[in-house]
Length: 146
Image 1 (cartoon, one colour):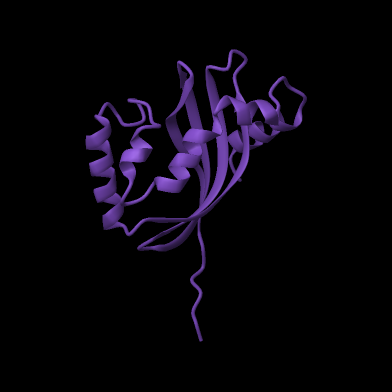
Image 2 (cartoon, rainbow, N blue to C red):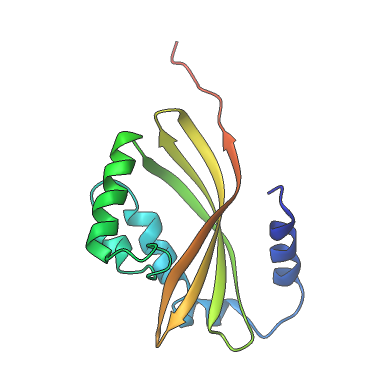
């Protein structure tokens, strides 16, 4: 967590605010991020497409985005290994939110640790992932079996 945005995120989390953990769970903010975490990869990108905004997909249809992204992930042998939810915040009118996660992924270059900042927008009663920013990235050292 090396970027100023992470510091601001944690500052907001630790000062009293009307946003409580119960509200985060009840509001559904975490649901699209959990779906992303569970299904983002090669085989089930159609499920991820359902919880993303048109802006996130850069204007592509859900099916075209899912197919193109899965193809790219296949080429780099992408696999999400584990993730940890850090926190969530929402704006005052609760039409936009952010969720921070730490994730470890495997690719052809090896294991990589990401700090991921998901920006979400509200579409009626549903939250959609509108943007994903990797705020820090660390390539983990390779381990060898002896």
